[in-house]
Amino acid sequence: MTAIPVHVFLNPTAGRGRARQRLTRLQEILLAAGLEPIVHSSRAVGDIEESVRKNVDEGLERVVVAGGDGSIHEAVNGLLRASRGATLGVIPTGTGNDFAKAADIPLDWETATKLLADRIHAGDAPRRLDVGRMNDRYFANGAGIGLDAKVTAMARDFKWPIGDVVYLIAIFRAMLDSLSTPSMTIKADGFDYDGPLTLASISNGPWIGGMFHIAPMADNTDGQLELLIAKPVTRRRIMTLLPKLMNGTHVTEPEILHAPVRAVSIRAEAPLPSHLDGEVQPLMDEFEIEILPERLRLI
Image 1 (cartoon, rainbow, N blue to C red):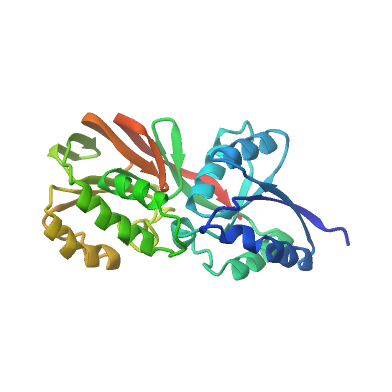
Image 2 (tube, rainbow, N blue to C red):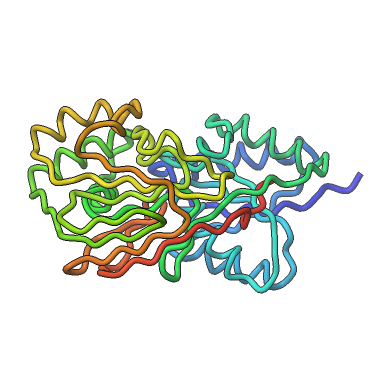
């Protein structure tokens, strides 16, 4: 029987380089399952997005990404910018793997690879998941403005292979640096806020940074985003909130405001750091965010 070709878009640096180390085994699993892996390895930020877009434009109907949340972010943007549709398969080999958690993909990458191969062979119908959009960029899992974006940027500077703990260390480093509380005007479906904030988080999935259960109510199939904002807090208060952020019990705290939204507009008094799926964005002071229901087809 002829092997089924499967195009794998690999980020070799994902998971602090673990993705590169796993490539040979990944290929062995796919070959054993009767699939023919065709590997596209990225060399720089943006490679996966451009390669996915180009290949889908040329007729590719199935994209498999092996990487973390940043790789998935690029693949989703490549898919949704292409001139035609394609399905997405995910092999989680990153640090946080927030999207994999939200999409019920096994975090054990070998198990995920085998299950993905089974679904491809069986011709299973893809699942439909929601996608978010901020200005001209798409996001699969979530967007953040303010402190969490600053923490994300700091976490990316660490090269140590310490997994999710890198985000916790980055929080402590951010607190030592400074705690800014820029003024923002936020308007959404039945929700208005105008004043200083520590952060604004807009979630399609429940987790950020691997270990923070930022939006426990988030569901990437319900056609809405979860807006959570944190009013100004002290360093000491952040320390008491951290355990609650990890177990998802922070939502009822007095400094936290929450609203389910389909679209939200945010204006800041000055350009602020932001992130999409953990990918740091250029400084901006205007953010138009919306949900695109069932836009992503997941194998």
